[in-house]
Image (cartoon, rainbow, N blue to C red; front, side, top):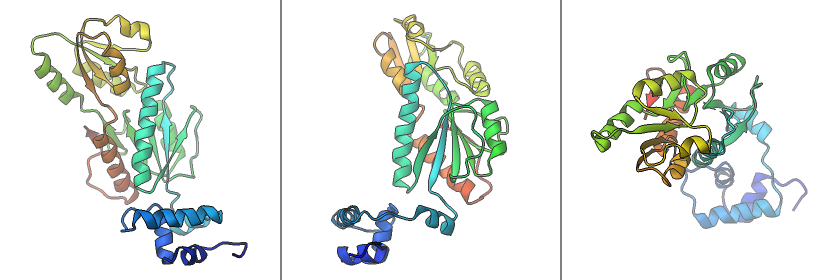
Length: 267
């Protein structure tokens, strides 16, 4: 083969059309391509070290197919584990949609002009506002709250529904709601206003004091730890597949500049 391998070269070697090669390399899941054909194309691509020209692709389409995820800062190991659960699930979901997830750390984040959208997860209002003012791509809130509820799509847990479920399960028995500390004061207010007894746990010592109590735990990794000592426990998945799917739906609404969709979504 000549030194500069093209898409047409890959197609000829795989005995498929150029369009089929393009669909495979761009992770298109809306085309009927057999797994055998997909593997054959990727093997040939790897053999000849073919690289997509992402810069040219981005200029032509106006998209980078990258979504940035900004995570709030926490020191508690279980809280960090919950964030990694968010990263894993969101990354897997977005990959199936043809997008890559890029994680952004640090409080001093200004212009992110290399992504199609920004998701703020568990960040405070100051950080969210700074990101909003510095960027012009769609900005979404996930497990956090923005003061401007009509400007940004926000996907959060439906705490009123959680309370309804917890009340039905526990009946007359008192229970304690256990949550990670949340960076958003607006979200914290909603939680404390919804439930009469809330503990924002930031250490193992804090959790161990809850032994033999009836618990409603917000977060899967936190719930797994609390199962060791809780008298009775209800674990709420705050990063469910339904919430992630709704977040992506909001992303599409924002990208396409559609109006009429609700901005404050609780699941």
